[in-house]
Length: 190
Image (tube, rainbow, N blue to C red; front, side, top):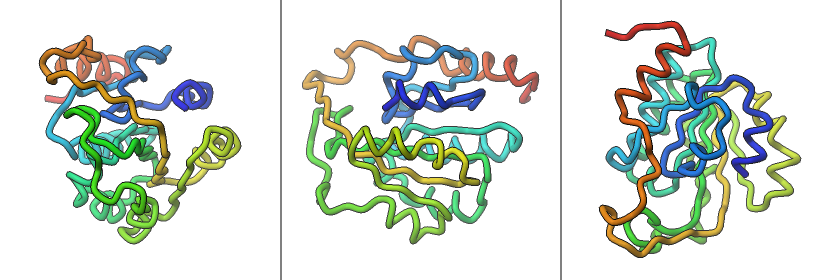
């Protein structure tokens, strides 16, 4: 899915949250990526909202996880109310809390995150459970004005090792990521 998205990225700023940890290996524009590592669960969506509001002429894409959405559910109505037309919120749903050991997400098979996002006020929502539908819908998704929410079912990848023993996917510090993005966009934030 990430490889397919990469073909349609254009010059979007990408925030590869827990739902997009492999993005950093695929991206051909790393200076337009903001990998934040692993902040408190639920924090990526609020950051994406702030960034989308700060750079309204740039498309902002978030690869989130269902664990993050559940832990930061309050971000959904806030995003919907602020209505950034440049924000695309992709949520990768593997049914488990993979970063903490693969514990099952409660009621994972019945959750309809796109319905939740729609109920919070997102004007466009999608639910996709296979790669073929993603391929056929990605151009439509990215042509919609934001905020757009896309719930994507994926297979779980579970790493059953303590968090501090796992290989680190984030190679840049948060400060380096921000500095790279500021340079790319030609801005300076205090």
